[in-house]
Image (cartoon, rainbow, N blue to C red; front, side):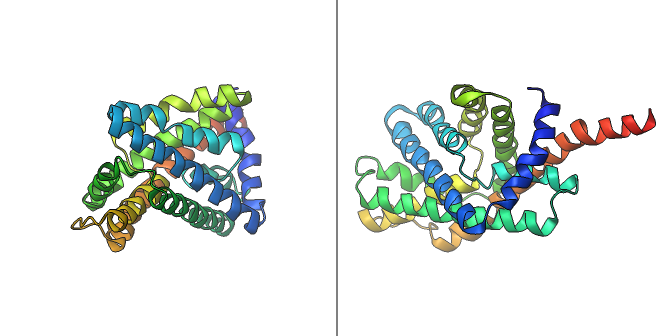
Length: 257
């Protein structure tokens, strides 16, 4: 399937996402948060045992589960800007869908953070989880914003590539490399951070560790805010560019002809 065909198909599928009843949308978003957090759990353990490359190789399992299971992920859904630009989706419906999915992702991610930490999953590597959380909350606002932009360019590229594939194996193969790249480069993903930073906070409580600067306030304002803004700029910006290239420009050419 070509990128132009993907863009045309997304006009329908992106609009359909906004039509999902809000209760069902929220549950699908919780599921996506769970999948990303479980991948983050495995990636943290893999990194602690085998190094950063292992974590990067493991983490794409999260988006693979999201895509194949049909759950709703905020970062990928930033591509819904495409039907909005085509005037098939109002700004109000777009923002409402983004908000519902964002809150569902947050709930699912924090749930897994609590279950894994208090369930003893990180008993052998809790220091790594805490260090990751502390490093993320210590990022300057501008750095977190830029890393968020770069991250969601890659995530939305992965989603786009997966839409062009047929069958679970093809979709997983298509999305794998862009996600591996973003993790290896240390870019910032808002939904992943909804797991990593609360996980680090819970680990501090469970294991009696004091980490200066690692607080719920730092999580929300020093990391989640700039990273979310960056993800939106990166994802919606890529979506707008793809819309212009594959839908807007051909339409202009057809009118001139």
